[in-house]
Length: 269
Image: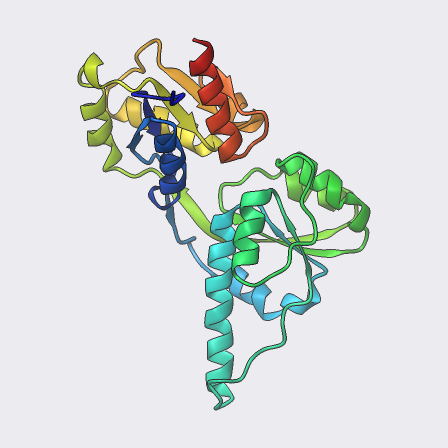
């Protein structure tokens, strides 16, 4: 029997990231509802990122905390290499591969790095910034590290690495914003108990913060008895701070673990 048969599950992550989670939920019999509470938009400027990429070989470590950052990094690097090739009059010339070692916060980010042709040298035992900082600490003394991330990210990682002796350059690759179109979608979803979801998934602190901001903007309150499923401790802390402690937390901050935690919860009930 399918563990999530006929369960309606709201997915709040970005539209382009939701399909994999939705497919895995559908495979267990669930009916996913896709209403993003985040959309990825460019930063105010790419100047700092582009400047860092122009001197990439000067860094000893390149740090990624999301697959979104990897995607932007690869795109901006390709643009820069194309411009250099055109200036040299040889559009087919190639630039020397980057020399930094690469650290990824978790397996999803590592897969994104590998998919664009780079090797991952370090993944921490727990997929959170605190664990990544601890794993990098032995390499931090006098090291130059480039952290490519979202504008609104926590400063746990750069602060810990700076304290350990590294020089950390932060280059913003993107920023998260709330999609205004989701207000109407949420109003429709919560218009009747018959359409309520059985559970809501939160795959980052931002998805949690933004959902409740959208509900407030839509003049809605979260109906009781809807299960809140968190991908990990940072997201769970945000939910608790918002006054909505999670009912479900993944054993590790990955999408498969989140799905398994949801399935286990409904199987027990």
